[in-house]
Image (cartoon, rainbow over all chains, first blue to last red; front, side):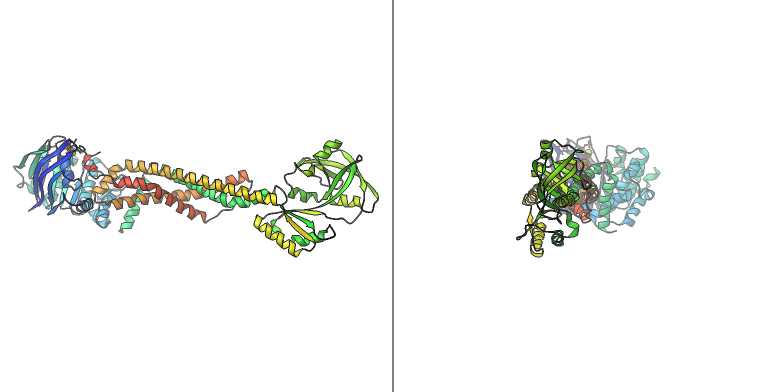
Length: 232
Length: 378
Ligand SMILES: Nc1ncnc2c1ncn2[C@@H]1O[C@H](COP(=O)(O)OP(=O)(O)OP(=O)(O)O)[C@@H](O)[C@H]1O
Ligand SMILES: [Mg+2]
C-alpha cells in the first residue's frame, strides 16, 4: 500500500521551475533516498511532501488525503500528526534544554510528557544530556536530539533533508544506525542526501535533475540487508 | 505535565535564557513604567504639594470684625479658629493699624505677632532680620527710602494715643521688608509695643490666616466661621485660591500630555524591539510551525512573552517610579511624598496592557512566517 503518491507535480517560484511533472510513490515502511545536484528541487519536494508548501499543480496523496487541496490550517494539522522532520541544521530551540526541545513537539501535538521525552532521548543515547542546552551539545548530539524530537509523536512518515550533511564520519554512523533501527521497526523514511553511500542504504533511490525525476531504481542490496548492516 | 506548565517553561525560558535581547525590551518597558508611575504619583501629590506651596504665597482667609464695634479681641479669634482643623492652620496673624510720625513725617503703623506674620507671608523679602524682641521694628522699603534708615539704625516714633495724649518711643530697625505691595509703606511693630504706645488693652482690626485646604474646603471653613463665631466676618482671599486652581488644572493637563507621549514612545520602542525579536527568531517560529504550531499558538507564545516582559518591567518601573517621584518632589517642592501601594499592581497592569498592544504588530508578523524556511535553511 502506498502511503504517498505524487502525481504530475509542478512547483514554480515565479519563473523558476523547481519541480516539473514529478511522479513518485512511497509504500508503507519503505526507505527512500533522494539524490540530485544542488538546486535540482529536492528540498522543494520535501517541503511539499512535508505539508509545508503546496505544489503549483498536480496532486499529492498522503495517507489517502489529497494534501494539495486542503486548507492551510488542516495542512498544519496533517503535518503535526503524520510527519516527523529532521533537518541538516538541526533547528533546536536555543533557549530550551534537550528535553524541553522534544517536549515542544509533544506540546504542539497533544500533551507534554516528560517520561516519554526522556525515553526518546534514551533511544538516541542522550538521556544524560537531558538538561543541557543545544549550545552545550556537539553537532552529532544535536542531530540526535532533533531525531528524537521527530520521532516523539510516532509520525507515519519521517522526512530527513541531508541529516548527516553537517556531521563527521562517527556521528554520521551513529545517525545512520538510528535510521536503520527505525527502518527495522517499520518506519517509512525519505532521506535527501548528496552521499551515495548513504543513499545505498535505502531500498530505493530517486534522482532529481533540474526539477525532473531522472532515475527511480531499487538499490541492489536493499531489503536483504535489514539489520545486518552494522556488521558490514 | 500540563500544557500550561510547558507554556510557562517556554516563555520564561525565552526571557531568562535570552537575556541580552530581552533586556533592552525590559529596559524600555521599565523606563516607560517608571515615568508612568512617577508622574501619576506626582499627579496625585501635586494638589497636596501645590496647596502647601500656594499657602506660602500668603494668607488665604481674612477675618474682619462684623457689626458696630469695628474691632474684635483675641477671644473672638480663638473662637473662630475652632472651626478650622488644628492641623490645617499654618499661621494666624492679627493686625492692629494706627498712625504715627517719624521725624514729623506721618506713617502707618501695624502691630502684629510678627512670628505669625512670617508664616502667613513667607514671600516677604526681608533684608536684615525679622524682629525677635520688643523694641525692634520691621520697616517697609518705602519708609526706609523716605527717612533713610538701614537695619541697625534707631528711630523715634511719636503720635497720639487712645486717650489723646502724645506718645513717643524708641525703636531699632531690625530689617527692611520688600513685598511688592502696600506693606512697603508700613512700620511693623510687635503687638505688645504698639498696644503699649497706644496705652490701651489692645485691639485687633484684621486677622490674616493661612490655612492648608483646597478652595472648596476653604469655602466650607469660611461658612462655618460665619455661622459659629459672633462678631467675626470671614473673607476668602479670592485671587490666590483661584489662581491655585487654574495652575493646578494646567499642570495636570501637562502631566497627562507627558504621560501620553511617554507611553507612546514606550510602545514604539517595545514594538520595534519585538519586531527585531521576531525577525531574529524567524527560524524558530518556522520550526514551531513545522512541528505543528498553529498561528494561534505562535501568537499566544509571543503575547505571553510580551505580557511577562510587561509585568516584570512594570514591577521594576513602579519601584523606580516612586524614587523618581520622590526626587521630583524633593527638587521642586522640597518635601517627600507618600507611597501609594496600589500603584504597584496598577503600573504592572498598565505595562502588561501597553506591551500587549505593542506586540500586536510583531505577533502578526510572526504568524506569517512560512514553515518551509526551516528546510531551506535560511
Ligand atoms: N522560495 C523560493 N523562491 C524562489 N526560488 C526558489 C525558492 N526556493 C527554491 N527556489 C529555487 O528552486 C530550485 C530548487 O531549489 P531546492 O532548494 O529544492 O534545491 P535542492 O535540490 O534542495 O538544492 P540543495 O541540494 O542545494 O539543497 C532552485 O533553483 C532554487 O533557487
Ligand atoms: Mg536542499
